[in-house]
Length: 404
Image 1 (cartoon, rainbow, N blue to C red):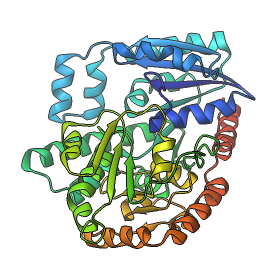
Image 2: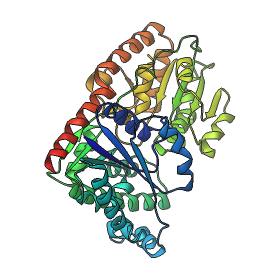
Image 3: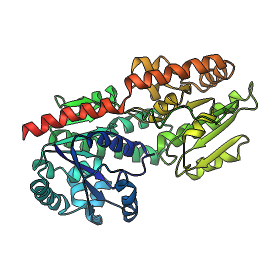
C-alpha cells in the first residue's frame, strides 16, 4: 500500500508523546509499505526539524505546506464560541480547499491508497481533502474528556473556569464534526472511545493502545540506583505533567519526608514553566529541563511518582518506567485506561496522605520494588508492543484501501 500521513508540523523529536506514536507505528509499516508525509507547518521553526525526520528513513517523501496566518475576524468568532467549526475554517480562508486540490494531485501522482490524519487542527484542515482519499482519523486522546475532567477536578478561578468551558465547547464541536467526516477513528484507551461514542452515537472508533520501545527503554547498565530518589518526567509545559510535578513537590513530598527526610525528587522534562523551575528552590528537589537521554535518569530513581490529576489516554511515562523495571505510584486518573494486568502492578492512591504512604511503603521494601519492576517489564512486552499497534493499523488501512 501507499499511505499518506498528515500531521500538524513535523513529528520530531521522538521524545514527545504524540511524535513517538507516529514514528514507531510508521517505522514498522514502512518495512512493508510506502509512506509519504504531508506536514502542515504552523510555526517557522518546524522546518528546522526536517533533518531529524529525514534521518529516520521512514517517509518516501515529505511535503511541507505552510499554514496561512490567522484571519482576525475568524479568530474573534472562535474566541467568542460562535459556531466553532465554521469559525475555525474562517480563520484560514481558502486553506482547506487548497489542501483538497493538492491532495487530489498527490493521490494521482503517488498512487495513494489511504491516508492517516492526526491532531485536532490537522483533522479540521484536512476534512475536505478526506473526500479525495479514504482517511483514518487518529484522535488518540479525547480532548472533550480532557476539558470535562479539568472542570470537574481542577480548583479553577473564575477566569480559568470560563476559559476551560469555552475550550470544552470548542473541542466538543470539533470532535463531533470530525467523527462525522471520517469513516473510522482510533484512540488509545476505552475511556476515550466511550467519550467519542457519546459525542457521536454509532461512530466507529477502534482501540489501539500506545506501545513502548523495549529496546530503547530497558534497565541501564552502569547506572546505580540512588536510594530515596523519586522521579517524574514528561513535557513540563503540558498541564497534566506540570500539575503532577507541582502537586507532588508541594502537597505530597512534605508528608513523605516526615518519615523519610532524605528523600529527593527529580523533575525531568522539556520546557519547564517558571512555576516548575521554582520547585528547585525546595531542598532536595532537582529540575533538569530537557535531557539528552532520559533512561539513565529513570534508572537512577527508585520509582516513578505520577499523581496525575488531569488528562486522558494512556500515560507513556508509566509504560516507559515499567519497561525500565521501575515501580510506579500513581492515581486513578493515571491508570483508568490501562489493561487490568498493568493496573495490578501499580501502587494506587488518590489522596496526598495515601499517596505518600504508598511511596513510603515501597521505599522500605526493596524486594517489592524489584519484584514489581521485573513483572512490569514482562507485562509491557506482552501488552504494549508497537509491533502489535502497527499490525492493527495495517488491517485498518487495508480495509480503507479496499473501500476506495
